[in-house]
View 1 (cartoon, rainbow, N blue to C red):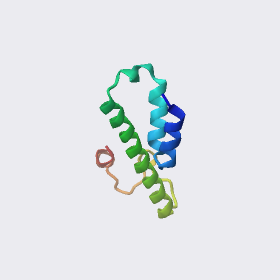
View 2: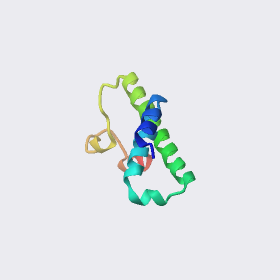
View 3: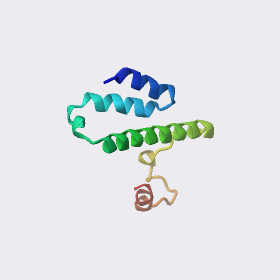
View 4: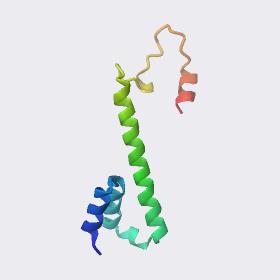
Length: 92
């Protein structure tokens, strides 16, 4: 099978998520038992995830946030009236 030309073509078409997924699937012996539809679904899922991640990263850069805020870094001991259970429920 023409693996490298297929990967090159996927990258030329701007489908880098699919290209990397294709490489990984080709390297896994158990993936050879998957049907065409399952292969295609896995490739499309990876491409969709990669594009969503790129959009998120671009928006985060454009937002120019001053702090890298994370739920795990919140100090609930400070007297600000923060409800820890509510925060964790909303974050989950």
